[in-house]
Length: 182
Image (cartoon, rainbow, N blue to C red; front, side, top):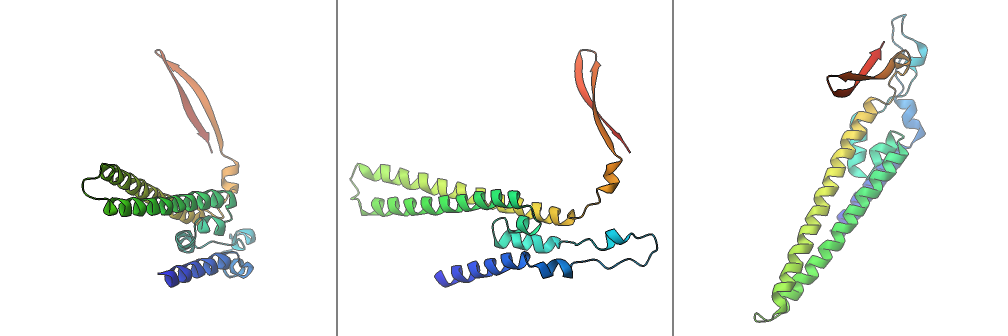
C-alpha cells in the first residue's frame, strides 16, 4: 500500500511538472490554415488539451487549473481537496480508535454505548469529507476541461458586444431586462 502511494505521488508530480514545461506550448501551436482569410495571429495561438487538463486535475489537486494557467483557482482547489482529504484521514483514525475502545470494553460497561456512538459519528464525518472531496474533484475536472477548451477564446468578437441592464416596471412588478447589442 505504501509503495502504491509513493508511485501515485511520483506520477502526479511528474504529470504536474510536465504541464509547466515550456516545450509543451510549442508543441500545441496550431498550424496556419490554408485559406487566405485566416489571420496569422489566430494561427499562432497555443492551445491546451482538454483531456490533458482533465487528467491533470484528477492526478493532482488543482493540476488542471495550474495547467490552464488559472493559479488562483488551482490554489483554492488544491487547498480544498487537500483539507478535505486530511480531515477524512483524521476522522478515519478517530473512528478506528473508538472502534478499538468499543471492542475492548466488557459487554455490561456503561461506556460501551457512548463509544459506539462516537464510532458512528466519526464514521459519518469521514464519509461526509470523502464525498465532499469527490464533489470537488468532479468540479475541478469539469472546470479544467472547459477552461482548456476556452483557453484562447477570441475576445475580439466580444469587443463590439454591449450588455446593459435596464430597469422595468410593470403592474406593481419590478424587474431587470438584459439587453445585448451585437
